[in-house]
Length: 158
Image (cartoon, rainbow, N blue to C red):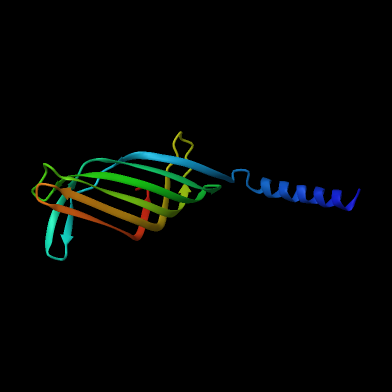
């Protein structure tokens, strides 16, 4: 047997040994979609006025990818959420606007195996969110827009 063949055989056996240490270890990629609701918020404009804002039901879309090792999952997640403004202060007719967020999170999740068709899980995630607001009320001449990145987190189940 040549030296190259011996090295190839040794590398193959070492790789096989790593694979059989945890046959359940795997990479994964997934999508997510759903409904999102926002409670009434209070907007503060230039530290002068606190105005209640109501939102319609919205949607969220996302993608996640990671590595599963036994019951543990380590993943990165990007998601987008969108809600239209329903009313701003006392105005509900002619209001045009939305709040949308993009988040980038690193999650650590533990799957609880109870031999059911669904698997409960617990976990945490930390990262950043970009929150964007835009609003126009043409009848009153109010036009607002703002966005910014801020710290974000999540606990699972949410």
